[in-house]
Amino acid sequence: MVGAYHASKWGLEGLSQALAQEVASFGIHVTLVEPGGYDTDWAGPSAKHSDELPAYAEVHAQAAKERAQRVSAPGVPAATREAILASSTRSSRRCGCSWRGAAGDRDRRLRIAAGDLA
Image (cartoon, rainbow, N blue to C red; front, side, top):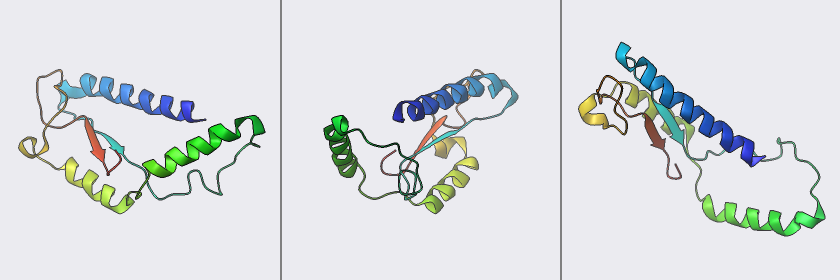
């Protein structure tokens, strides 16, 4: 169910934003990494699928077509790992910021998009 998947992502974003505001005065910085897709078996043979209903065959075909057009080259987990490690030690002048904390500092970005599709 894609709706539940996206709802959980939005929930994590809201939690991260609130947490960032709550801990800013303690000098604690929160960073939410938003990666693109990876070459995993997330929806492959290891996934459990229900039986498709013939009435939705066109919907499934259209979704598969759109997904194939969207995903060109999946991300490399090791490269994202290196970006995350680098961002955790980055200074305020090199990192930039998309959110001003409660204490008014701009030491780190709240969100980091990682990968071509992020």
